[in-house]
Length: 419
Figure (cartoon, rainbow, N blue to C red):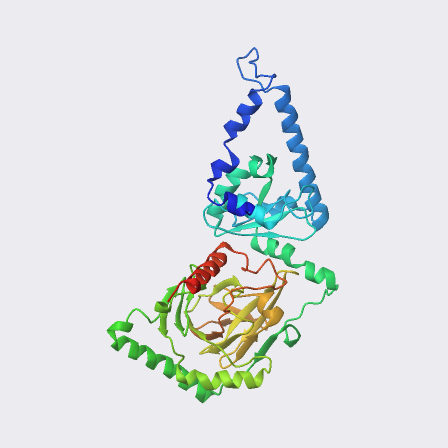
């Protein structure tokens, strides 16, 4: 039986014990606590030795991380306030008596909203990701500088770290190995920008088709709840298949406006395949998005296990500056997406870069401020039927997340059930 299976159902207290239990064991030794003349309880010599040993181990772990990552700014890198990602400084593949991802998962699984562990080959430290900082803080309070019985009483050291710093550390190995210091965002890494992909007449007809479809949905009581969903400050509508923004994966068919693609979009999918030969012309998920003035979307990578290699985006109504961030090098490249344009992301551009639209009311283009207006876009993708990914970008990949594993197990169980 796997270690993760053995401890999957244990509560955090069962695994780590209470701090009081740990102190109780110390008090059971021959060197029991005594009170000094002032009546204040003093710690024993044995306890002081243990505390010194833990402090030395901690300093050694932090120094090792600093040397291997060439970072002398740990006070800035490791944060005092909660973040969803934590660095486990003394548990990894390369540590003496090292652990693997499965063993670390057994430690963190009992905590609510634990997502995944990221281990780096040859590194004595690892990373753990939760859904939010409020979830990570519970785990840190239970684990940090406390003995872990799953690791034979080893004291773990955990620190909060920003997503971009985590992604840089996790992904930069690829650039270090190849020695490629130059960062570009073009066809060489799978990024295609095609201005005037559709004509002004086609653009007008596309807008009218979207509005006409809205009117048809309003006339149908059954479809009244299948129009636009508000996600933060933008509005989305799905065709073919939906995306669940809470689950961060493919959603229910009940969330789609229609299981069929609108007929008016099909010619443009064929045109995209003609423009980009590496695109096979097959998509089965369409999301139309409306961005009111001042709205945006935070840095993200489209879920690796939800969708295949190709992501297409057609921009409508007005232009917007989209930022593309390369975590491995921290480079940020801004692209001005004009209406009627097409963006295609494949390969490294799709898996190893993040993209975002800043939340603001204007963009700075060629040194001049350009006021934003409402913008629409259409994103087209193909479902990843295997729900697996084997890319080289662990800092951005959801292949080992608990949600994705559960979804794979549910699909496997559903297929094995008799009809």
